Length: 126
Image 1 (cartoon, rainbow, N blue to C red):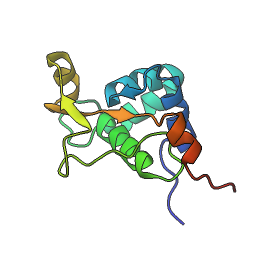
Image 2: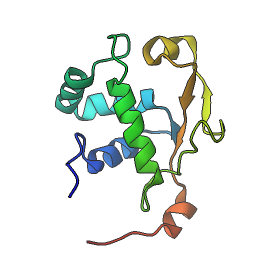
Image 3: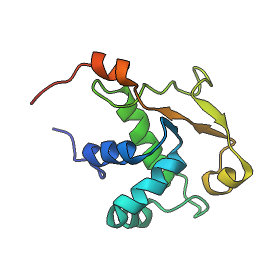
């Protein structure tokens, strides 16, 4: 059996649901996550650090990877993210402000499933 993730999937889902727009970036996700789960945010920052803290794998990297993985799951409330190396369709250039806190010139744009996709998704009851 695998190890328990640092941030539970239900917290990821709840954060996504609280984002008021249908599309969002990791920076939008972090803004909501910090408000809803401040203790978890502090724990993540302590463990991974923020961009600019001379770490290669930061809290932003961790949460971006979790969102990417979550988007690929059956039953996700997100459309699957296309990997950057395969296509830039799910990415956009960062603004100067975003680049200062994110670092990369490209940022993923996550998309919530619409009502049509929600109705057709497969859910597994446990």
